[in-house]
Length: 234
Image (tube, rainbow, N blue to C red; front, side, top):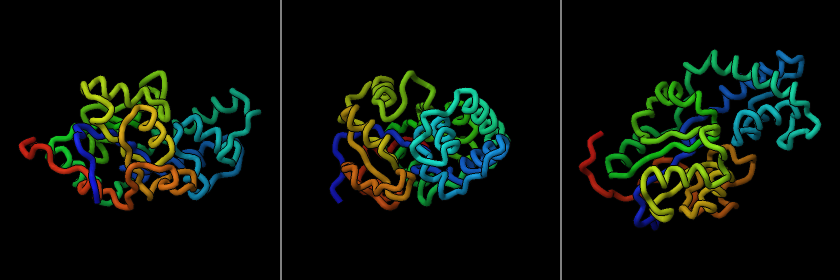
């Protein structure tokens, strides 16, 4: 497998890439719907609604469709978001399961000298506790949520922000994620990209979006990103 050259940093998506957050997100969205007197949603449906932040998740949940109803009232959405956050906050300490190989692969990539950033559309308020619960916080120099900046993925601003923080050029960083948002953001920022096939890409195979590489297992990143320097202390 031909890998990347000249890469110094890696930006990772979170939901559908590092953690399987569908059960927790689906539970919170379903409970919010019930609170509003609407039918609960199932996990399978919620899987196709994840990836564009919590507001879009609840727009889709209220519409029972990946394409939100444009007539949804702002008041209803505000109530739905309030109930979602109530339920998600209550169970955040339970965390979300890591996908196989994630923790070990991140540790090895750090040992190889790569700088790691988290770039997710999940609200930033959840990141410190969630990443600590998952045991991943120590791997990332920078963590950006969907509301950390004026724009979120697929806009390139989050990746530009990482590049500026790390003082790197676009060709020196690769984005790793499971959805169109990640691939489009990487392309717009001029970075390389890796698509993971096991995530939540709205039912569309990630390979159809043309990432530089498509992987079925997270640990296969190690074949694409060889050692830079083995002297970094974990």
